[in-house]
Image 1 (cartoon, one colour):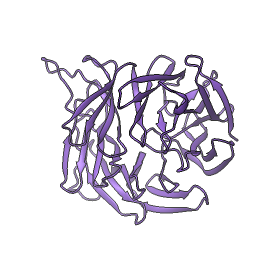
Image 2 (cartoon, one colour):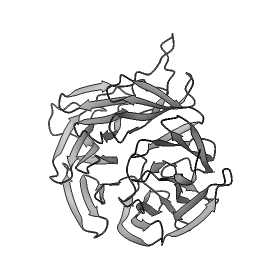
Image 3 (cartoon, one colour):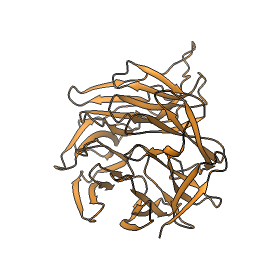
Image 4 (tube, helix red, strand yellow):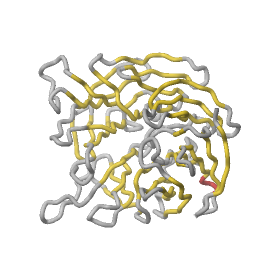
Length: 367
């Protein structure tokens, strides 16, 4: 079903292991959702993906031998996250469920009301106990509920992985034409703190990064984007991810921002301290290592994407590879790390525009 092949990047000369299915698309999880199992050897990939519908099969694969086990069939890409206990959490419509990746045992965690639809990606605390989620709610039964776009609410919340308890955190109200709140991410060490984003055209969104403290109910726009003297937005930002210690969020200031330099930034969870990390390349998405030492970014360029390793202590960047890139999901690279912080995973296209999952061992990528 899946094939392993090794090759050398033509730009850097560094080795890459590719896992995929000849002639059929294969991709890993979104960069904010762990795709590796706790042994940093096995991983979960989505394969045999229909390029039109995004539907494919969820598979456990041994990166060293290529041995595979199908865990779920006929599921849309972008719905999974792996916990520290090797439990794969997935959703389908209003159902959240769990699969033990070794036994294959499946159990329902909870079902939301029938007028609710869970959305991805999922996020999870470091201890595997609480998921950060968001959903669309149609025609809410409570007439007092505040909604946007008439009949649609965007709801940010959490779900306890053992008890199935669903807690609603906030129903953000953003004005048209950009009413959507998404990318909900639970703080890895504090299940009472969630991030969510104001979604829309980045050139028009001046308040992208938000947090909600569930204890106090306080919402906060933690990164105040710059405007010029005429009141025009000059910082376009997005693709956030929590640091694994919960201290704050890494995110990208996109290269077409009028205000320069652009690149990888960090803001603490209170929105007080901001830091510019690196702007050597045209960054797009960012993943961070569990040990806190590294970030990995991809770049958005015509037909290709570079994968860049950034040392967060020295702020130095190193180019790892440059490969073809499909401009649509699930073909974005979305670089992310294994639990041991030694491997970077990303999605790329081959010469026939078929998607593969690439793996690089950063111990072979010295600065």
